[in-house]
Amino acid sequence: MNTSQSRTSSVFRVPADVAGLLGFLAVVVIGMSLASDRFLTAGTFQSIAYQLPELGLFALAMLMPLISGGFNLAATFTANMAGLAMAWVIQSHGGADASLGVVLLGILAALATGAAAGAMIGAIIAYTGASPILVSLSAMIFLRGLGEFLTRGGDISGFPHSVRYLGNGLWLGVPVPLWIFIACALVWHVVMTRSRLGFTTRMVGSNLEATRYSGIATARAITRIYLLSGLMCGVAGVVMLCSFNSVRVGHGEAFLLISVLACFLGRVDPFGGFGRVVPVVIALVILQVIASGLNLLGANQHLATALWGAFLLAVMLARWAWAQGGLPSLIRERGPRSPVAAPASRRHKESE
Image 1 (cartoon, rainbow, N blue to C red):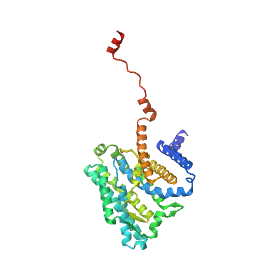
Image 2: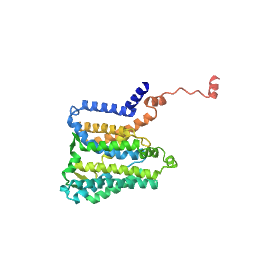
Image 3: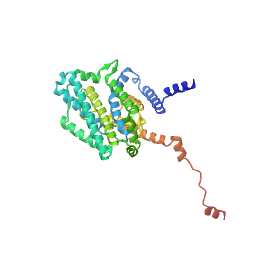
Image 4: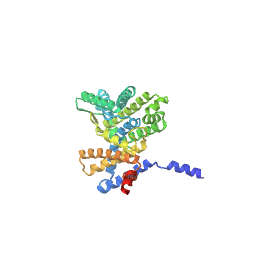
């Protein structure tokens, strides 16, 4: 009887990080509802449901490189190039009158473009030993310049109805992009918890040299990690094209900072080795709720960007304090210390 009860309790036990994030989410919702009487409305939650998927897909694209101890600064421009590939296929085969088969072919082209860009970044990092930040930054500059050259700094529009449905339609009362994000999050969760690549990703992030000495082909693993990151960027590029009904280099550029913030808020270790999908998804909801609340309060866009940066700094400081044992431990360490006994020679002189 006790064994069955313990098994049941272990199944329904909520991890501490998930419980903490859910509590924080509740506080944010209550705070925003008190700040604005328009927050707890169907329109607000519908807006959150439409805006969350794009940010969420970028956060998933950033997740695996971060857990592996790397970074992918080229995520947004990889998505832009994927969108350009999809747009080129559709525009070359009918444009606004293109068939569903052409749209599907364009989606495949977008996914292939994203995966190829990610594999290129991963291979350079893996086989040259270069810094992931420098490699992905170089790739970001390259992809941005290439995209602006191909589009002449403009945008591409004019797509069939099926494209607009993927970006703005409803299925079972839920936005289609949200269904896409949920499916991708489930796939990522399975990859990180059930697959060999997920285990290898955490090992690489924890100790690359030890992983290599254990017989694991780390170069191939790192290449696959960034390939999957690029693939998720391709999905994000498809969703952005369908949502905006156009593609332009620079779409989603602001998502880079917020996706990193979502990962760190979701307890992903910035030095690699640890991270899970579920806390990151909850962190995404928190950030989107905050963004919607700021919008309802009429916050300036530039001020909101500054707040995201300040929030990221606050998260990093909070994680550091937690790693040190929490605030009480820091207070004890820096509190008043007992006076140090005087040296023996000084005590002898004072006695004289």
